[in-house]
Image (cartoon, rainbow, N blue to C red; front, side, top):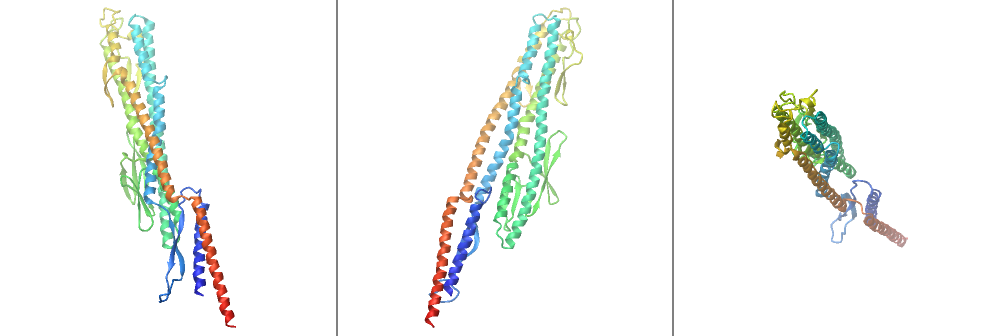
Length: 457
């Protein structure tokens, strides 16, 4: 009977809906799972006639509750969070090191110029002269120790960058493979929702590492590229990112894709990779350059001033410091003694301290410093440390904001795509009632059929 066929289609549709709801509930805690729902479609009449009501219902496909805009917003938020999250520990470390008692250049400079001031009371005192040599050596150690810490940070950044690139290549390969599986599934009319969820999770992980542009393709695949347009994934083909070490110690990036090599601009990369470049190029290396500039100015000006004076025996002044411009290291001239310090402006007056006072005055002299401009020598380190402190505070504020934006993006995505168990429980009852009602129709149809057969006996 036709009524039985209609009821059977309703029962089967209800069963499909119950299966979908059960699947949603089972995956309520699955990361990245996108809920689905049945798409009911009425089946029209197959014969002419005004009384033809149709022949039931079908579920041609399932609805995937996803919003591409919200997914893109979530990925963009992940890139910004990854960028600021990566910078934070490096900024904190450099701030802590530079402000520490044992590594502060201000402490070293104050001790060095303090020893010079002490010697001005008795310029011929051998112990006071030797103390100047001692403080000069300690100051050089502070410069070199800080330089080593900063260069160690650069090494750590390079290692983290290499790890990030390896992750990017791995994820790009996974996304390309999933593209192929999704395209194949859709060509066979198989529901690819689970594969799409897996691909979205991989894209989300990738977006934390670097800023992305994601474009949906008609065949169900997604093309993924850097924000600059350099391709990473197209269909089932993935590019390969490579680090190119430069002679100056920096690292460039290229992407090999389809037998082509694309140079990647490091500005505005976003994600962890962008954060590493932002810190290295915007904070770390400028700080290294400023500190090396201060060391060079100190060595040059102190040596120049000492060369203008005379030692106690009347000998012309010699250098106290040696600055190596190749590696930025400062040292005290090997073998120098206190007797060689030229404090007198007159070779015949051993007790004259005019040149010593001129050396002491260098602390208040304005000097050109790379990245800072012209700054009083005694204020250079304070200005450097203050700038890093401000940058650290701004970075912390940006990190907090990025974290909030990411949370809001996740909540927005969840409002559309995640499983609401209360809503699914309601659906479960409704579909159960639908199934029961259709089975009741089948029962009634059976009774009517039996009545008809009975009337013919």
